[in-house]
Length: 484
Image (tube, rainbow, N blue to C red; front, side, top):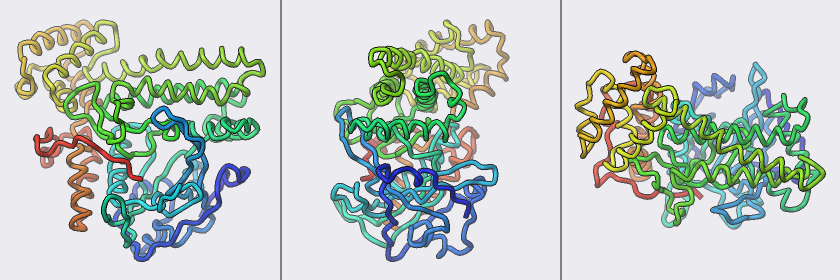
């Protein structure tokens, strides 16, 4: 296979060379054949061969398995060494166009970074990451991808006994802000430079011609994160663990642990069972992204300028610019949800609509989707969602007036809104249904059905209309959990 393992050519202080720990009785649950075709990745023909490959029992020719080292700020507290404690990077696969893909197995056994953990994963987190990462891709969000889901035939013990699973993740790379923090915290600035040069060569090669490539790298990563988080906000996504070790320099969403999608609109929404103080609440995601980027900037200071004060000044200027960059992307994404160009009146209308949603505790996804029908006064279903219908009616009149002022025809507005407001998201209760069916009955059909529906999140799909529904009180998911 055409592997070109460039990270493995770095010094071994960047990783541990280790093979996945074999499992007893692997069984392939699902393979993303469309992604494999996009990658030009040759799949074995039989299920048993697929299971051997995606369990790590049999390595593909050319793979050089590694567990990457990194550090990270976890809920604001610095942990000097984390690393891949239950994952192994098989290698970097090159397709025929020369595009590079990291292929990683999660739940593949212990490494030197396991910190007394077993290195395994219950099947639940595997299902969650497969469903949500592929849905994010279909929703138009930069993300790591799911290549395969495998059961191990072994038990994993957490609070109770669970069936074990392995998730095969594809990423542009697995370089995180925490990767830089690991070496910067040890004052190993030669390694920081090596990693920065590697990152530029791999992700931002045009920066090599910049007057200051390292300042330019910081700018690029800030810009990528600004775009990413703005897109999260558009679909009501809450990452749940925005630690620096879960923040990629490529701008992809990574590590779908206690993530969730907001049902009723509330900026303070938190799902993660370990986020006791709401650090990573929906509305706090932009400020946390900036916080993480400040940590990244601190790692690069010695590279940005030999004069410490000049380096700090330049880095602060770049990180402070994140706010304006984020707001630009945020209002572009969010105003598109109401069919408007992001002028000042449009931003005011957006904020007013969000206030109405919060006051009425209305479903975030369904309200925006139904709004697309209200351009032509077809809004009975929309009105039924709201307690204060008069308040909404007044807003609708102002909104239609602004559409007219901007010269946006009704059919144009509806089309734009339907392409920005999904009809289907991985609703938390549906994901939990799929996980419970697999754990309790070894039934993966609900999982596969949900994945199929989410292939077309912006289409109506009337035969699956029930999957659009806001959860009933007894279906509500109030907490999601990390997969470790």
